[in-house]
Amino acid sequence: MRMISLAATPIGFFLPSRSTHINIGKLALIGMLVTTFFLFTSAYNFPGGASHYPAWAEAIMHGNKLPAAMAQREVGFPLLYILGGFTFTHSFIGITLILAFFAVLMSVLVYWALEGISPAVGFYTGLACIVSLSPFTYLKFFYPDQAYMFFNLLAATLLIKFIQSKGNFRLLYLFTLTAIAASFTRTAGNLMYPVLLAIAYFSVRGNLRHYVGCILIFTLAAGLYQWHRYDIFDMRHQPSIPSGKGMQILYSTYLYLGDFGLRLAPDFGPNTKRLFDRMREELGPDVRKSALIQKGLGDSPKDFMEKYFYVYTPEQLIEKVSTEPNEEYYWNVIMGVDTNDQFFLNVAKEIARSHPWYVVQYSMRNLQHALFAPGYATTRYNTQGYIHTGNDFVPASQGWGTRSEDPITQYGPEAVKEMAFFQLKTMPAFIQKIFSDVTYFHVMNFDKYVLITTVLMIFAWLAAGLGLFSRAFSNTTFFRRLKSIGIDKLTGPIIVVSALVVYEDVLTSVFCQPLYRYFHMTEPLRIVIAGFGVAFIASIVSPLVMRVGGNSTQPIKSLITGIQKYDLVNGYFSSRRTQWLFLLISVNVILFAWWVSSMMAHT
Image (cartoon, rainbow, N blue to C red; front, side, top):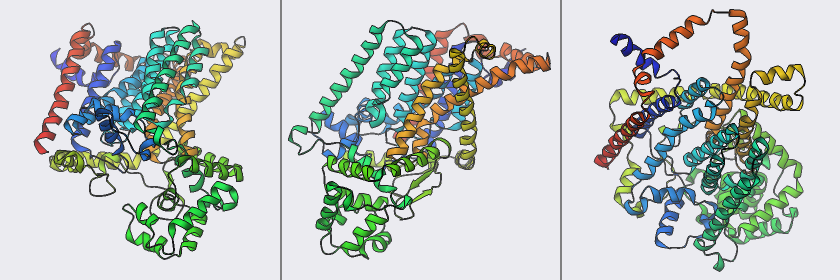
């Protein structure tokens, strides 16, 4: 009996239990192990612009003001820096542990989102989330990506549970608080809240005062945040309101002109004409000696600057800026001519008014790639235009010393040591081999993974559509049969998660580029939609299998039941929730403390 239990227990870890808390604990434990592996092996990345977030945290704690250039950022990630103790220790260990905790919980949230439809599908989809490595991709990448992924997934999960509960308004209030956290973390985070709240209302109804209360909470939080921005950016003394909106909108409307045979022209409007006049003024008589170019130079390669900047006269360079849009012309020339973000917004509006169909064209092209084939962009230090980029596995890419890094020396030698330390290089050879194999497997199979999730998402959207029709045509025999297998229960949850994914991808398509990075931000949500697709397929296929195969599946069910019966974890902890929770917390503390002690020993 003991031998059977010893064999059944490790296998049982990858099989769903009848107890929800056991399933959550299994996913959490597996997530802890994988997270710890990546804590020890993945590289720190502190890319350009990342210094804005600890600077904001420092400004909050010390009552300082921030320069207008940082207004493109949001306060959520700086608050996590404060929570991680950075402003006291100037160590990145605290913020890393917070991001690691988010990584552990993501697969649990995927399970929880699907558990109301099918615990088995939820469990296997949670495992798929871990295997996809999406919770760990931005574990040590110091932009808000990891936090934004987590808060969006948590918000979607809470809203799904609210819809399924048919009126547990505590979940709606928690959803509102999570949506606030998401909106504080990334600029685009607040626009989707009214849509999601409307979906919740039409799905559940109930007492209207709760919905009004949630709106008031969200509005109050947004108002307090705007007051904070007004104060910390010292807006009362600024010539214009600091913002990154104009810069971001002009970025996309300018960048794709060449792809569609268009050029930037001064006759678009008075602001665009002023842009050309300002370029002539700032460039001066010699491009090489221009203060504008020197100011925006950054770490641009010398060969690139010689070939695409210094070889031209000012008028020739302006012509190139007009006809061959690229990142360097945008950042080094256009962005340097003014500090008023409203001016750049007005230029973007004039481009859109002059070529409205062009905006639709590039947005639809980008949306297709964002949803179904990511990895396209206009890349740095070339004039090739919109191309397919290579897929880098972010944890394998060390930022320090290999590409642009914001200065962190101001935070002391310990901070520099942590950022420069690539812990993988100190690991045993077999660990390095495992990490190398994981990296290779991830990169080589990522497109297949995108294709699989895309197909399953399409099935989920089909299920949502049929569910809507089944409500409209409930008296029809076909739709009554669909309702009998529970398809109408899929509709609301699928719409909630799909709305978030499509919203993020539309914003990416209109204002950014369909890079792998922006795809990764929606990955956990895509996996949830794919899980609903699996649930839909299972609801259709299972009755057919039972009708055709009869009892042919009984041996498989008996085997799974037998493993679950002899699974020691399931047998002991199914009725001992407190001990199970204590074990999970203890393991998590031990694993994370192990990594912290290793980091402190080396840095």
